[in-house]
Length: 193
Image 1 (spheres, rainbow, N blue to C red):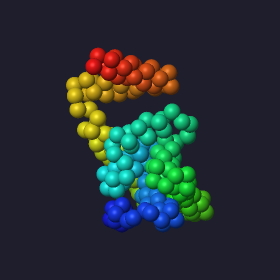
Image 2: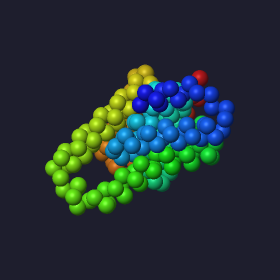
Image 3: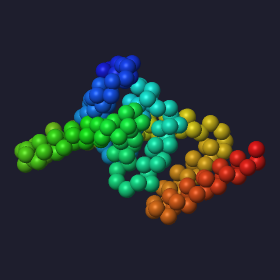
Image 4: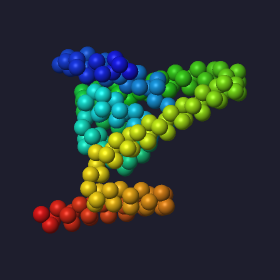
């Protein structure tokens, strides 16, 4: 991963180099980003906000929020958006291809070796360890976003209320109601000033 931080200092004036750099970074992430979309979003935050400084926490949070309204895995949309912001539509495509290709390669290899490999006790332990790692990455990303966005009693209260509501009411209607409520609170607070 140390090569990732070196890439951020490169001059991205050449479009082809920029597309290759985007592909290379996402390709490297694709090999080590175990877990589902929530874990991927954590890996992306660590890489593109904390290490490479391609985005601020606020910009990243806006991309993540937008991705939750689109169908499909949020990490695919977030990755595409990061690449798009870096180098336009070509950057978005390179990010998507780079991040997805390792999964395709690994799935093809597992399908070929499935009967010998997947029943192995060692393999099951490795998968279990990778799932635990993904939980840690999601927790770290959540804590990082909490520290950046929940700086007042009001924002902490909204965060806690939102988390409770979404844990208890796990459906799209609850998500829309919670987001509408947050928008109303923001509007009410901004009209007072």
